[in-house]
Length: 241
Image (tube, rainbow, N blue to C red; front, side):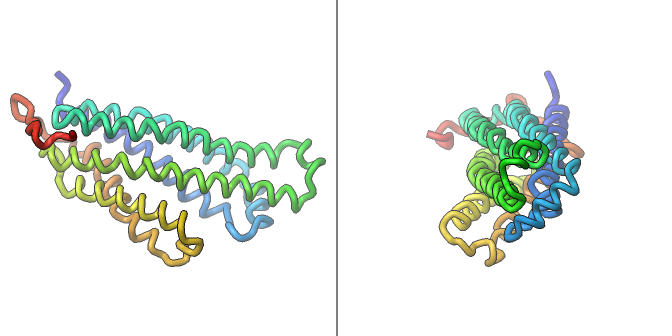
């Protein structure tokens, strides 16, 4: 049988790829290229940094492809704790993957708009800039929608970590709080137009960031303890009904 330490490090390696590519695609590149209230500067930035923009698209596909396999690796590690929670964790991630892949198409549309000469003959420069910004806003909306499931999967994952005893329980608590943070940000951006200006988003996102990065590094470096023999299972009365 494969040891928990080996299973954990496989999951940690997959998690590391998701974290690094996710930060690059969702954080670093937009911060360098996109000025949300200025289509002209944003368009010029993308034109001047097309390689960076293209790499971010590829990075996004890599991120979501690997994210498809991450919960399967975690399921292999944690399903003996509570199979229903583990299945729920996998299902919530699987639901997010089509949303994420479809959303990257918005970035590909911007790439086509900039590089296809036929578009340049149809649109004026200002129209092209506006069109590009529309796709970028759609992409941002798609990230917000995907964030629902990027948050929800953390709750059963965190619960499994807390109950398993093979990983630090504080990481599981942070993951569950991270779920709440994702949902708060979704509701905030959806219901209040000036939510981003309040500065709340960065604070409520902190537990998810610390919890996911911390869990990733712990799995990769420290691995996981072995279960007792036979493996510890949550009493049936405590299982998801």
